[in-house]
Length: 417
Image (tube, rainbow, N blue to C red):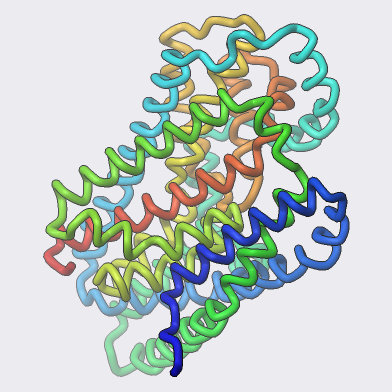
């Protein structure tokens, strides 16, 4: 008798749990090097395969989505709703992080000896990671950087905001020149889009093995001891992320759409697991688009606009992490943050998250920007580097959940869900 094939979510979850167990065994039994040298490349190959389709999929799907709207005013309306949703949820996420950090005070109680040891062990690594994050971006910088001076260079380097700008402009112009001349171009990119989606289907067949390799390598490399050392800080971040997902996103779905909250979270689970395992919302983008369109019923023209934009500018999980981290580091150094400084954290983190790459470790750079804006020593980042990777995985899962919730809300308000 042939056994029924398990759903994708179940297979990915099994791979994730098996990877955790295998990683712990590798760390405790002393064969971490074997896992990193021979198992991790399987996960790296999986991420490279997904990353391979991100740029052509984003450009083609966004361009096709724009041309299918047939109304430039409709594009402006959808764009305004999308950006407003992302900005509001990001500000709420930072506020939740600040509230929890000020209430639970995770940075207090650390001995001077432990603090000095942590900083000494990680200061060199922290210096390398924050070196590029010293310049605080202005609104002008961010807006100008959206416009590419060389579109080919933007595609080669994977600069998503610039790619989105090119796709938007090209799609709008195709809508303006008339169907007789634009249709062959649109047909070509529709073909590209279908090919990329088919590639994603094939890649997802190996997702459980890729997730197993990624998570086992992380656990084997870092072990669990460092997690226990900074458990209180980690728990505050994780509790904040859980509250943001279960309250903010659930309320948004319940108030602004007719979709059941349970249906939403069930549909987005595969993308959450891929984002968690890879620590990258950009790497999970093809899967997020697939889940949102197929399982949540969001039309392709909205998916192809809201989700690529969200993977670039919507970093709710990262913003919440920055709010908690800023207060935590200030508490460790015995610094009290005034209300003005905490408002600065909200504004700076919201602004910085717009330019944050959806890749592992990018949150450290934007955290450096936030700390510099309120006068907290940048060396304090060294305190949290031990758990940075695990928290990065958690907040990436939150980021893709926020992207999908925006697509559902926008589709509902447009009566297209």
